[in-house]
Image (cartoon, rainbow, N blue to C red):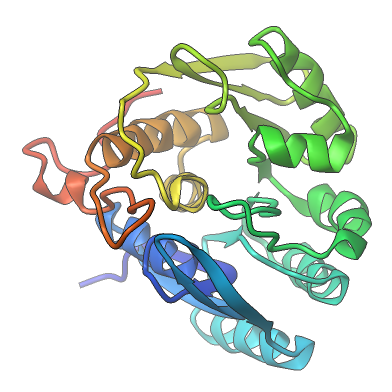
Length: 272
């Protein structure tokens, strides 16, 4: 039996299991790829917030990455929490030397409002990490943090995407989930646009949506799909996960990563 496509997540650990590498690996399993991980930081985290975070040494991150890539190989890489400028720059260098598409989720703030990226690392994200990204997937808070562009309406998404693209990723997916109305995202490479819409579900249990979406995109890229196809399929998957989000603990619960495994149609059936 041949091995499934391989996807590597480079991200922080969420002890509550809703986001971070735990969400990434659950997503990858649900979508039929083999997930592997490079842990960049360990967090004490639950449904109400982040109680502590400890980043790993750059040497430990490099060693994990080389161990996986040099032996097993990867068809796609996804990044999440990188915490410091030193980690951002090291991971950007590693990705730049890897012949695989990279999905960069420029994680800055947790769902609960806790900072997960040092202010001193923002310039490294702009100048080192975004230029090696195949797809960058910022939400509106991260767009404002990185570019200064504040999105108030759907029309502002184009301006936000252009600002993100100016830092060098091949594609920008600006997630409009914080706007009112339908959940609308804009995917563009500067010449073509793809508007992705889905119903907005009245469900507060949405912990891990950004990690889940980026991992789903990476999973579909590893299967050989184009960026627009991968993003459309990932949007369908994360929409179903949000719909099934469930209460856990006393705060914001996670999305349902396993919903597609229980669907009669099976995982990854979205069309572009």
